[in-house]
Image (cartoon, rainbow, N blue to C red; front, top):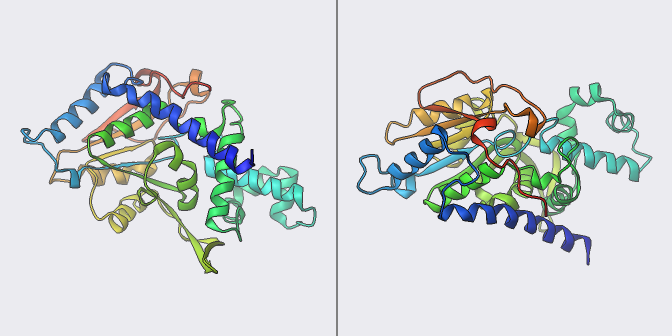
Length: 315
């Protein structure tokens, strides 16, 4: 079997494994969520905005849900997936070509984390520079299917939180338009999250890769047209690319506060925002605060208390 075929089959298997668990919700909505106030509030929200007899009914055209990716849908420690991929890609390039002797590649060879952390933009843009978008996304999917997360010991494709993927499916089943809005690059999120979430390409919004059109292909130039998809950048890019405010949003850090505020400011419709707190070091092997203070319309989600199964079961 060719490597590309193997990767495609592996990615598809992971996607169906997670989706299969989500399908169980037809009998028991959000079955991977523990019973409690948060699960109840989500279900009640979806019920009232989809009930035509409810005063809070929202037409499907306005049922917009936006999710942060890193730390909300998928593990982000010790590195966000796009950083882990970029470091891996550059390391493989350094092994394959000893002539690569730039400071960046020397830092890769010497595992100079100080240099790499100080030049993270270069790390992200150099990885896949000169590749077509299709070739870059093949590399991302190969990484996702085959490389193992350093602490969880799972393939990166299985580091998506099962309750979050299930929630996205639950919303889609109720005619929500679901989007990812992330600081990771657009080409990366489409290759990394697309197979697991099943979202259309246009529903995965990230930092803009500058592309060059060449003989029918789009080539990565190694720069970004936009990079600030966090803070106020999130509602701004939602406005630019979608043109409507969400009625539902989910994040996990102070970089999502502006998105929460924008959702809460949607006076035309009933709305809900949620913030995930990483308070489960036993299962996730790390704990860290969101840095988000309580605000009107925001519900805090405890990973320890509210998530039943954290990750999809091993194949």
